[in-house]
Length: 366
Ligand code: XIL
Image 1 (tube, helix red, strand yellow):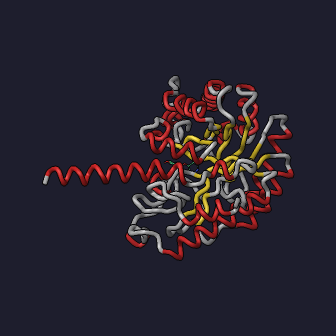
Image 2: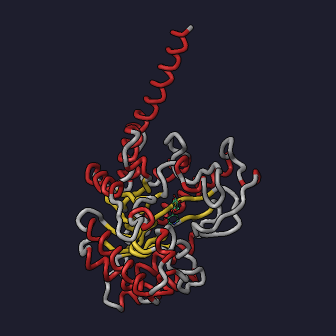
Image 3: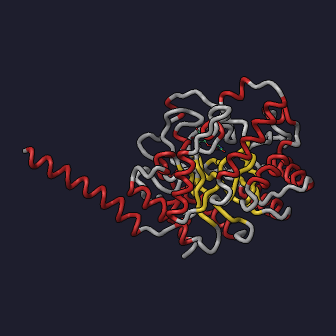
């Protein structure tokens, strides 16, 4: 009896391992399929950066050639105290990139969210300026030779295109954005510098974004690209606005990238990706715990196919497409804006198996 039980356990384990490793060899690779078009990136969390699951590492490096840290380079984590930086996991990420030939996009130097808690105790312009200068100088110069790019400033705009009220705007004035680019360029002259936001494909916010970019350019600082995060909703992807944005941003001489792509399938009563905005949990908000209905799965696949068709049409302007997570299981959308939901926003399911959307996307290259 014991023998039988063990045997079953062992054969199940072999089956699972076989499925995981065999799978990463036999399924087509996104990064290879699009290698002549644009980079294919993913967001990596701590456990992925630390390679805690070797089969998952193999899977990641077979599919992606660019990576963005999901959290570990944000100021709350990399700069937890006034005089203390924590480079342990960020350094591992840089090693990961070197080892597997994956380009790293630093995310992010100046952002109003996920700030270190000590910022709340600072109430003078001088101290905010000192934090700002030291933070950029210290972090950007540490990685000046081993990351590819920085999201220098993240989410500085309101939906109407005006500048978001943040601690940086309050104390330093609107010039803080160009100044962040100037300081990063000084500390890391060979790294590409980007402005990153969500909904900046929407007309009003896009106009604000163009204004912001022009001001950076007029200041003499360098800006190489603009990131459109791409947190969209199934059946409501704004294709026209996206195409118009690619054209308008490229016309400013910038590279365009889709930096945090995921397509939400669960109900939501607002648009965008403000991490501070939350909604209460109730069962109606979490309808697909037993699996994604086929019609939604097909709509998701159609949306991804149309998106990648658009990216390919403008591959001379689009340099990178990064998914915000490796698979549905580790997507932030399981926890935001409602905690504890079962979401399905990516191309790979919870077992790293390709979804119909994956086959539609890869099918564009056949
Ligand atoms: C998210 C992470 O995925 C979560 O783990 C974290 O709790 C909150 O931030 N826009 C961004 C990203 O620029 O940094 C955010 O990432 C998602 C929205």
